Length: 413
Ligand code: KDG
Ligand code: MG
Image 1 (cartoon, rainbow, N blue to C red):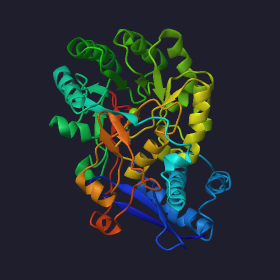
Image 2: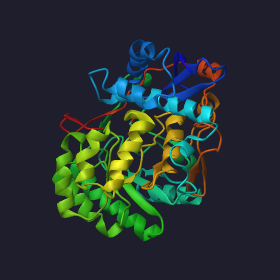
Image 3: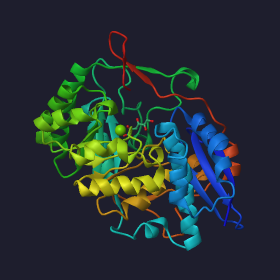
């Protein structure tokens, strides 16, 4: 069997997505992958169509590992979000083809089910503690057993993870970041200072635990903004609240600084959405500096690399919590769940509910019930693309926001 075409589809049903469709010489047999990189979509689309697609025409789509190696090592220039998102898009589509050819769901090819579903979490962000509490309660009412809680920081502008006003339902589907700014064309600017943040977050969890109790698993995403000693303080102050993990406390350039947080606190730690391969993750895993590895498999080489990251993690008592925001496409969400339900060391899965427009373009996203995600037992990944529908929604230039401190200097968003 041969690959006959690698088609890249850029579409914006409600935010931008980059889909990869790999066609074969077997009539009707194709695979669908996702290569969406929020705010840098067209660079990945060009990487695939200009540089990768010509290398794949005529190749056997069954040789997933060899294709992965040839794209990663064969290019000489390796790693990074653009290239690893491109490789992931190809890899996910190839696993879809392999499943369809075998007549098996991908999780079956990965070793079969180890659990009935993937424990899922959603986001609850409020403009104040009461609104955050309401949104946690709304998530619990919807069936969630794990909820990420964020709150607006007094004096800040546009706190990460806190959408505008809206119903509980819209918060559950809301995701910050895209189509913001001046007519959707330039990044919006957020303002943030560490001291009010470090005072507010422990108080938020005081409030939530007093109001809601300990039955629901809660946690918080720092979004890489703290220094090591600030993160250590926050982790220590959150200890009484028994959070599931503190997400992404530090920038990815400072992995060795996780040691300092560990020295001061037993609050579990999660990290990974800005790491792009198993080598990027290695120090965190081998030194047991984190408890949850949360790479984005759509930005870290796809299913092939995620299995290897998970295997290293398993060896060091680390569980998985793959990144699953709305700014990666349904095919990556499907790949997440196929891996989750076949791994021994799965922990928890981030998820969103896609809009009707996204589901129209990409039918077959994982389904949510009673706190768990699942995929259909159909061959492949179960996610498809409706190319006619995709044409109705052309790309719209969009950026992630930029954060600045009170003095105007740039901080991580
Ligand atoms: O594009 C950026 C988002 O993917 C990121 O902000 C989401 O941190 C995130 C999360 O944990 O979902
Ligand atoms: Mg995050």
